[in-house]
Image (cartoon, chains in turn yellow, purple):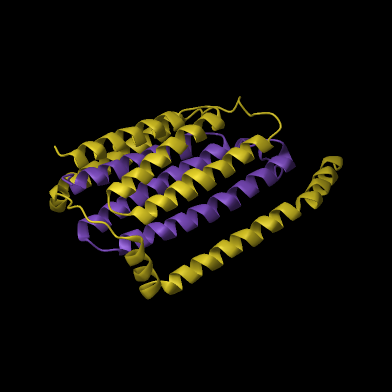
Length: 175
Length: 101
């Protein structure tokens, strides 16, 4: 077992443990903190698998931006909803996940290509950026429009808050 | 690098099923969104592993788009969660029964 393989299994263990601990917490803040560890492990895994630019993006976007956004939203709520636990039928959810996992394991075992040893290779950020804007510039522009649409949607949802409260009061007054 | 391709895929599948369990089992809307994030993370790992196995950069390009879609999804989702919390005072989907006659 080479050093790279040892690093891979170590990172996989860290990611799985952090995610498993995170999704079983009842407090969303604890879950988000565990998941930041999981996403940083994912960034290191991407670096190991030859995607340094994506590793930087995952560290900045997932662990940095998205999870901090979730933390801020959790802090927006006045009282922490700590009484919210699991659904009463959570066993069904575990069964669903186990079935999905069994399908994945069967697929990996059946696929003759799954035993192929991965060779180390890295796409430098320069090559990756040139490739992206050479061949997928239209998709990049579409993604930018998607982000703009998300921004407009958020502004609209946040702006309508006052009228929504009025609506709620009106609805509350009506029997 | 001597990791078999199947092990990367097994890791991705495990993460995806963990996210699926989180998405279905929790009754907190924020934990539901977090479950979707974990599932997208698993999918991204599968894409990067496939990009390394076939030595093509398309997989990495897809991960970039997954990141953008995840950012848009979680920001819109959280804005809606905050909005619905201000309307009803709860983030439990079972309590959203305004439409009930």
